[in-house]
Amino acid sequence: MRRPDGFLDGAARALSTRLASGMTRRSFLGRMGGAMLAATGGAAVAAAVRPEKSEAFHFCGHIWTTGSCPNPLGLPRIDKNGYPLRPSDGHPIDNLGRAVNGEGWAVDGSGNRLRAPDGELLPRAPRTRICEEWTNEHYGLHAVMEGAWYRCCGGQVRKLVDCCSHSKKRINGDASLTGYCFNGRRVFCVMYYDSGLKC
Amino acid sequence: MVETFTPAVCGSRTRQRLAIVLFAGGAVLASAALGAALGFAGGLVGTRPALIVAATLAFLAALREAGVLSVPVPQSRRQVPERWQYELPLPLWSAGYGAGLGVGFLTFQPVATFWVACAAALALGRPLLAAACFALYGAGRAFMATWPRRREASGPAAVERLVGRASLVPRANAVVLGLAVILLAVAPAAGAAVTSLGRGFDPAADGRTLARARMSSGTIRVVVNPAGDPADTFSPANAPALSGDYLAYADDEGIKVVDWRTNHVERQLDGAFSHPALDWPFLAYIAHDGDYDRLVLADLSEPSNPTSRRIASVRNAYDLGRPSLRGGQLAWHRIGRHGSAVFVQNVTTNKRRAIKKTDVWQESNPALTTKRIVWVEQRPQGSYLRMRWLGSARTKTLMHVKGRKTFLWTTALSGRTAYVTKWTPSTRKAVVLRVNF
Image 1 (cartoon, each protein chain N blue to C red):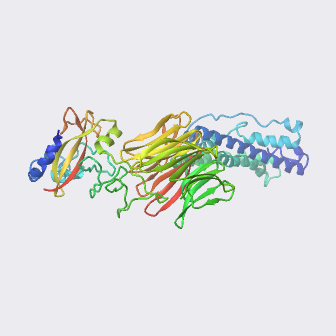
Image 2 (cartoon, rainbow over the protein chains, first blue to last red):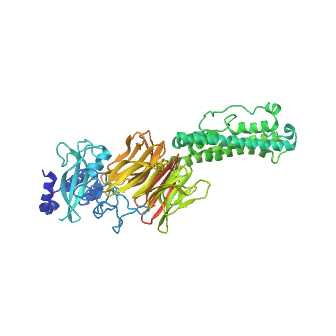
Image 3 (spheres, chains in turn yellow, cyan):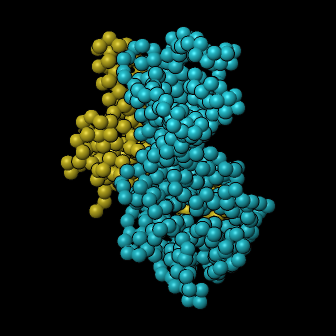
């Protein structure tokens, strides 16, 4: 059976332009946050959470709500299967944050495999999924990658992905939200996948 | 003491000098022995708790000396037994007086510094170093037996003049103790002292002998450094393992076991073998068998009939690394794309357990003794040298290296000293670090 977010993947291709220009979760929450702060008289602070500036709070497409899932290099960029990518250029990385080739071997900037002091090739470090393995090991949860929504970031469609669990607490330490999770699960942390599709 | 070491008491100036020398010797030896005992005890209880105790005591003592806090100092309110002068020969009583005052706790303690020094010697955890430091306490005792009369013919008058200035001592002592608190608080890794031993990788240790591999003009050699003896070099040789006078290493033909003192080849295993671990007569190694890597344990006690058995086997997409063998326990790692683990197996009972297993990090390169195991944990933030008692679930971090450009690699362990390779792939620089804990 096709995963629900798989349907969204397909829909995103057709709807990317509309999603990028319409009222979005980011812009909605950003405007709500701005209005609330403005109501309390914090005009200067309110300016900082205008939707256009919201990426400053977390990453593009996601404002300061649920935090990033644990990841090697600070931003939870993943490939379509949930494995970690280097946030700056989308190159696959292992769990130690090293660039790897197609077979998972650590490589240097020229693509040559890294070697140990004795000249032998270094073993492959683990490369496991951010939600299913990283989050589960760090927090002892049975988290799964479920809900997704889409934003336009850097001229391409970004899929924002919820890592969902039955925990009533999210990674921030406060109460978790239902978000785009289902079957009673709630959002524990978030990740993103840059589709490469123009928007 | 100044009043005691006079020609009148000793019998003549010559005997006076002899008594002072023996007193000094007794004091220095006794204090050094106390330091060695404390250092040894610190090695048993662990340096981190002793360091915390030392810092706390130094803080309390500084408050006491500054007059902020009124705390009694544990002490024995006795002086040296005067009757010894009349009952014992001069060499005995003078050396005995020195020993009695040198150990510190058999006499008055006007300041609390002695007990801070005791806790600091515990925190060192190294008997020889603690003995050398504590010997200074005995030297100070001996110095004070002669120095007050430097410009004064009368010993008692000199002592009285010194006592008159005693009010300065607590203030100076408070300042010194305050500095001690700061130094103890910033002590690196609270007890784990890291020293670079220079170029090399793949350390192997047994007792005070260290072997390591070195790359030299494209050839890998093994250098054995016995304590106090000149180094022995074996070339071409790689991946050393030590067990007493035996050295195992890998070369193009397989694995050789030699007596490193005589260079005599004891055993030779030809084939696609690498990464030996030696606990004579047992040898563990990795056998490369087509698509598989196998961890094999061989018993080499019978030269004509060596036996071997397979301990673990993985497809060569996995890595079994460099095993470690000591006291009937075999440790190794398994790294794959889906996780990594460090295992220990009792080679007699075949009981195996995972020391650390993870889906995320890279746990690798264990080394063990009969009591402890160390290994390297690599994370994106850096490499960590971990240590655990074999009977415990508690893990201690001995040191770490930040970042991804330089990381920790292979390890060795002997007593309370760990060795680890620090490797920077971009510069191809590998050094062996010694970590005393």
